[in-house]
Image 1: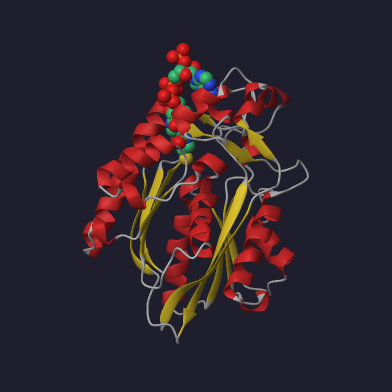
Image 2 (image 1 turned 60 degrees about the horizontal axis):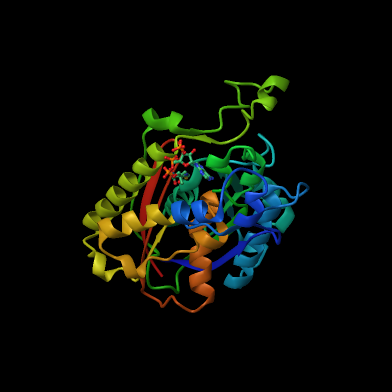
Length: 326
Ligand SMILES: CC(C)(COP(=O)(O)OP(=O)(O)OC[C@H]1O[C@@H](n2cnc3c(N)ncnc32)[C@H](O)[C@@H]1OP(=O)(O)O)[C@@H](O)C(=O)NCCC(=O)NCCS
């Protein structure tokens, strides 16, 4: 039995928020944002658009790209930190919106690392023979958990969703999953979080006024942890699989910040084959790696057999590096 990435898709809302727009909202400048992060613009959803709308559209595009009908899907995983609501899962909402028949559907919460966590789980379910066709989606409407008065975070994030169709296929001679290093260390949970409104900090009017439903972050600490976690995970996965850095066709790090990407690239020694699009989307959480894969796929820059090294980090602190074969 072979396992393949049968299709990719992504969706971003039409509305673009530029650095010039942000200059009118908080005390910042295009120059500061570009030099510190590499971000020039990000897409922002309308108030009436939910994460499931972004996710369903990305999923629809991936299914079309794969040439697979919704009726063939028997596993839906959505990675998100901005679910439509605490329950039911956004995966079940997406299932309904796409007309996918009854099957296993659930959400993964591993922040920006979520798509790679989902990829690991989906591969395990496919390779054990329990499922045949998985729709994996990373989607977030981060604009609804952004404090638009906090210049240290509001310049960083954007809304988006991306999707992969993963399939067990007896006619395919290969396996998209070469190896992975996936982990988390909860001791670092306080550096990046949304403090409210879960069971530990239920919603109150005072909490809303204090923006407790929004992302708070120790930027410099998160930066250091991101570089260390992603480069160590990449080195471990290369070691485990016996693949050399010069054999990698594309490296796709989580698109959080251009400087983090460059620091990881320098540590791995593969600066030229690093895919970057953070300037156009900002940090889109677990959508980011799937957007890169979809752009590479649709622009014909992936050949069968290409090795792709993905890496991500996120709140928790979570991290993952996964070596994929196209
Ligand atoms: C957020 C980040 C870009 C800030 O860059 P930095 O070089 O670390 O900047 P600092 O936080 O040290 O702040 C430097 C100064 O810029 C100021 N500043 C912060 N945001 C600003 C903004 N948008 N515009 C202008 N100035 C800003 C700070 O107030 C500080 O001023 P001070 O020196 O007078 O106190 C960087 O820390 C980062 O990218 N961290 C990782 C974030 C991340 O990836 N998070 C998502 C994880 S999935």
